[in-house]
Structure formats: structure tokens, C-alpha cells
Image (cartoon, rainbow over all chains, first blue to last red; front, side, top):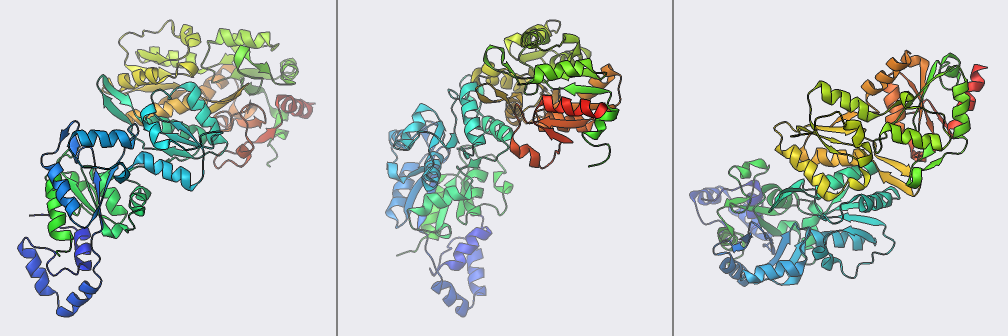
Length: 304
Length: 271
């Protein structure tokens, strides 16, 4: 039995499919409570699901192992009339690296279908026509190829241990004092390396914020603009999209705050009780990606 | 301004506390340069009947080193007149049985000669400048993460200061970075801590209202002094920025162009 949330009911109300919800007795009861007149208006306002956003690490794969059945589930999803995009918070992997890893795991993914926090930073820079100082690792720079970085008037901070030193941080600081916006790929405190915990971008962003008396613009999940940007070239609104991920706040909470439905999978970083950490709760919490796809195909799409 | 406000308050003053970097000189490569008129202004102050102390958050070098540097720039100053965070921190470390991991400049290490640094149970950071590398910050972070009660001590919390080639991040930025990473609040020695200003007042044997602080840092010099009841005047040298004059939380008792102007105003009101 799936758990229904307000989000789910919202979509259901918009649905003009005669039987959008099939399992469980709840549906039949609610159908009986719905008068014919109401049903007609539901049918008239139906907007079908147009896009599915999918998180990568922890959702499609955990480190170098694919989630069982995920490749097949993705193939099934692609056969439905719905756009698919892969969204991820990364500070060091360019799209090409991400695609290579997914293909090694036998996922059918194109580079143009990936929207990462690096893509979001690039969109923001292009929108505001800014020339960034990029505190990013070599591997991430590929996603910024062609961006003018001469005489920088913006600062982008990702995870860049090679750049987190006194000289470079002073350079960034001076630009910010001169009015350059501070853009953070994310504000993670630390991450795990083979040799132990290591400082993430967050501490350095926080130090710059303090010294320059400014607030960074964070571009990755769970920011609302991240999700709307990811959908922008699909020509669909948040209410026509669903997000699948293993991070209850960054994936599900962020997507639902942006007006999408969010499906939480119990893989990757999921911990027991995560679904209770956001309000409203996830539209659906399910064991893993294949079940999420199954739910979408069965309940959120028009049956031809 | 009230009758006792700046600069009228100069009449009843008994002592003056001066900040160093940004007031007497601009620090930087090769020992820095004296700010125009400040050598002369210090001479005039010394010749007056006002008690004088120097209160700095300098944490790159031991007192003896930077005092010698100031003497070479022509300033009449001695170590016994200077209050800096490191000695205050050393006293606290010894009193509380704390063994610090130090992230400070090599030049400051001699201040900690008497302190046990084996098997650290806290991290102490100063303005480590070039030593603020990712590796060194990570090391400090891991030590804090491994402590049951992470304790971070900081020599000052300044945001930035002016070097001859531009503004540079001060220890405060790195203190905030470690605070954020470990979810702790640092204990700060030096300005703007009231304890620090109080120790200077005790040494002078004066009451707060009898003393004036002159500095270039609105929050740490002026704001810190004001919290102890000491009047604070900001100079438009060093790290001063025009936006300081419309700051949201701290309003200086007075703002002057430089130390020379401040000293002339003080002394003219005392004649």
C-alpha cells in the first residue's frame, strides 16, 4: 500500500483519467463520494504528468553498483510519453563524467538530459551576464567551457581543495567586496574521503559570507530555482512534474516546495523515518527506483 | 551629541588606547609602512599627561617581533604597553589545563613556548595567513571532530585587514569556517571581547569613562570598546570603508581622518 499525501491528492484532483488510482479500497470510497458533476470538472482540468526528474547517486546507483532493476525501470519509463531528466548536486563531476559512469552501469542516458548544480550555476551566470572566478576542481570546469572568465565580477564556489588557500580566497573576497555576487554550488559542511572526513564548500562559503557581510546564492537542490530551471527547456510547469530521489530534504522537500510531486526511495542515504522529516510528507515513499517508476506508470499517467 | 561626547570628552580623559595596524601603520610585505603623520602624533600623545596603551588583535607575530618592527618605523612603543590576544589565550589555556593544536603563523609560536601541546584537547587559531591551507584547516577540523566536546579558540574574530597590496581575510573568516564545519561557537580572545578591554583598563588603573579607544575596525575596536563603556573613535585609514559610517549596529562616537587629526583634536580640547 502506498502512502498518499496532499500532493498526490492534488494531482489526482486534476486528473481526468477515469481510474487514476487503482490499488486499495480508499479510491473506491473516494470515487463514491465524488458526484458526477465534480467528476466532469476534474476531467476538464486534467493536466497529465509531463516530466520525471531523477536523482542519480543513491537513487539509480549506490557508488559503483546500480540499484537492482533500475536500468529496466528506466527503459520502461522512457516508453511512456513523459520527458526524463537527471538532476544531481555535484561540485566536481561534469556532465560527461556523469554520463560515462551511468553508461558503465548500463543506464541509457544522454548528456543533454542531465541538469546538475554546475549547470544551474552556469545558467545563473549566463542570465546575469557575469564573468566568474571559478573555485572548482579541474573536472568540473568542462561544464563551464566557453564562459568568459576574464576580469571576473562573480565568484563561484564548489568543492575545490586546490583553490581553498589563502591567496585564492583573498582574491575571491576582494571581488565580493567590490560587488561580485557569491554563488555556492552547495553549502555542505564536510564529506567522507578515503582518508577520513574533509571540509566541504560550506565552511569556505560561510567564511566569505562573514568577512564580506554578504549572503551566498546557493544554486543546487533543494533550491526552488534549481527545479524550475531543470524543467524550463521541457516546457512544463512544476505541477506537471515529479521528482524521484533518496534525499528527503534536497530531492523530495525541494521538489515539493517548487510545486512538484516528490517520491522518496529507501535506497542510498535514506534513513528510517526520513519521510516524517518534511511537511507535507513525500507524495510517496517506496523501496526503490523500480517501484517509483511502477507507481508513475500505473497512477500518474494517462492510460492510452 | 551629548555634552560629554567626542571630542568634548577629551577634557576629562585620563587615558587613550590605540589600535596598531591601520592606525599607526599599514601592515604588509617588508614590515609595512607608517601612516602619514602617525609617528608624530604618537610622540605628541606620549608627551601629554594621558596614559597610553596599545591594544591589537595582531596574531601573526610575537609581541617582541612586531614591536621591534614598529620601532624601526619610528614609533615610540615598548612591549609592556602592548596588549595582544596570544598572551591572554596562554593565560586561559594554562588556567584551564587546555592543550591546544595550534593553527597560527610560525612567527607567533614563541608566545606558546610554555604551553603543553601534546595530545591536543582543543584547537587554537590565529591569523595564520599563508598557513590557512586546505590541509591545515582540514587537520584542525579533524581534531575538533574527534573531540567529545569540540573546543575552538580564536585570537580575535576580525573579518579582514588592509595590507599594502589590498584587503586580506582575517582570522574571523577561518574561525567562521571551522565553526560552521563543526557546528560549534568559538571562544574569542582579543578585541572585541570585554574581558580583553577590561584587562587593559585594569593595567591602566582607569575607569571606562576616563578612556578613549581609537581604531580602524568599527566592530572590533569601536564596538568592542563601547560595550565596556569606553568611547570609540574610528579613523578613516586602514580597513575603514565609507559604509562603516552607516553601519546597522555600531555607531562610532566620532570619525576622524587619521590618528594625527584625532590627537590634535584631543590635545586642543585639553589646553
